[in-house]
Image 1 (cartoon, rainbow over the protein chains, first blue to last red):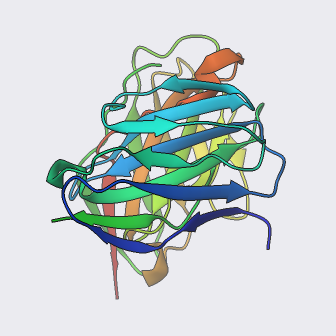
Image 2: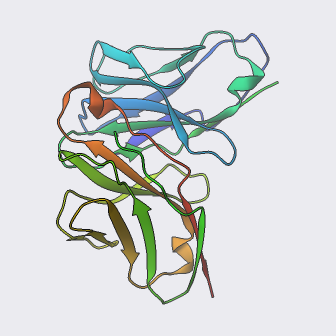
Amino acid sequence: NAGVTQTPKFQVLKTGQSMTLQCAQDMNHEYMSWYRQDPGMGLRLIHYSVGAGITDQGEVPNGYNVSRSTTEDFPLRLLSAAPSQTSVYFCASFRGGNYGYTFGSGTRLTVV
Amino acid sequence: DAKTTQPPSMDCAEGRAANLPCNHSTISGNEYVYWYRQIHSQGPQYIIHGLKNNETNEMASLIITEDRKSSTLILPHATLRDTAVYYCIVRSNAGGTSYGKLTFGQGTILTVHP
């Protein structure tokens, strides 16, 4: 089915470990974003991309890196995991114009 | 993007209409009103959006006041599955880097009860 696919769905990391959260979309959307959601809070923008090779920082970018080598994929890298990065991470893509964003089902990350 | 204000929570009886208000008094002329909902920690789901005219789709209706400073999302016959957090978001469709951003507030927790 067309949409945004995030892997893994769950992950436990030790402090200091690195990992990459994967996000892929098959709708040929130009715009992709990463958000984090902490308990009882709304989503906060980490990084976003307006096309292959173009990324920019959102509201809470520290501790995360992104790259966009293809239209389909937008991985989020945690360089050195910290307990403060325990959260649920959502990837989203957007076609542009008068359309809504499509969100993935999320990755639940715990850093111990 | 303009700031939005929503009530933190609302209740609705199953089968009745749920009317969720949103205030966006600083909205500018090229900004649209979008509504999303998030059901129990799933990814947010797009519901509807509009600029100045009322809009309706298979999920909901959106009523925007004439001065565009507030809007109401209407779920005409709420079901238990409509229990979710509803987010009202104002953003420009002018293109460029602003397309990458959606700014979420706290939203309204809608509880539909039997």
